Image (cartoon, rainbow, N blue to C red):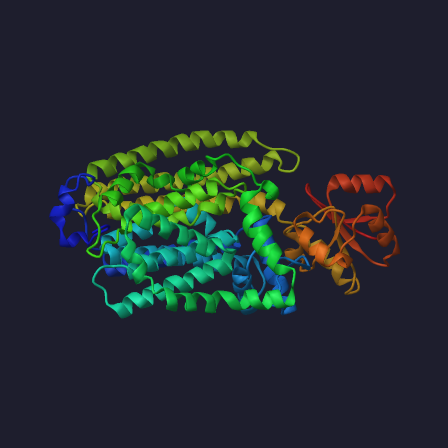
Length: 578
């Protein structure tokens, strides 16, 4: 069967043309307590740095601020951003972040906690699935591959919607794989399929229709390619649809009742126009995501092709189901789907990552010691070359991001590469000293890339602290504290994605609605359409604050608009009416 339990058929493994010589490992590569310690170590590395970086625009600040507003207003049905209705995405992550603020207070690490939990849980789900489908060694390897893939590790530490979506899509995929195993009882299969339907509903509540459209399209393609029509009789469609709609429907009904304009904007504009037209101004060539996956799975590229061949070569299960081929179809279709889109962002193909980890994890225990030694030596050389290349980081810089920041970041990059290089040498030493296959050595190699991503990602805060607005927040909060509670705070031709969160105060949009165009159209009284109108309001207000770009501040100052600067940086100026 595909992704078979190799302990049942070592002879089949050794005769597989895609497998290297020798039998694969089938048991845990380390003891039980060692696995517990490794999980604790990973949890510490994963969660402790959450508050070490400032929130960066635009996604991190946006989704943190939406959750803050939901928490302080108590409106859990109508999402708002900067005080305006915001229906671009469903509310699951906003709910989770608002609950986190309620339980732990409002802050940076709290804003990232749900995303980090989703990423960490995704590692465990991948390991559990591979262990049940194949054997414990494959489970250990799949978890290791996913945890050490820079794509998954870094996205698990940014407050964006794609990690939550990817986690629930991973649960959808893994529940399908576990529910379609040959020989399991009907009750167990039904429970797994109900979990599959339920997680699809949560994926829809995470980011919209792609939560069900992508898994559905993959399933249709799989049955057409593999002619596995019997699969559809094992999906528990009637009861599964009940589970799906019971979870997904209530919020859509409630928000539509309160906001009649919701349906057209959410389903037509955001779900279809966003994909089919360039209206979002997020273009990219058709090969955009090739580089994303090459960098995102960089530690495991040398095993990629053999891993795919290994998955495709596995025979069907006795019930006709082919898990390995489903994983490949899942990865290829999602990759092509977003490659064809007019709107592209780095995080869009993240749902591929767990499937690739399962494919590579299934093959990793088969890798010969000689192949693995060459793998480690190759990556050690790569890290040396990367350290040399990092020297040129210090040549970058402009007015918004001064050269001194790049020079500071280069130190972090060198530290990250240095730790990764030492751990790669440790992986070579472990390989020489153990005869228990390649997995003990792979632990050290995986740790190298986990630390590289963690140190490098933490060092990125040299840029994040400047772009976040956090350095301006104390002065702005002090000004607001001494002014009346109803003092207006204007965003003049600027939607600052982080300052409202750090200040704890929304801004009134002026002249440029930015991505809040839908919100200001629904509530036009909440914004100021032109700068001359704003100047008139500014003159009439007894007290007021405003944030704007430095160039606009210079123009307004030249017009003798009365303003007193209370905080500024390279990106924005915050002024108070004298």
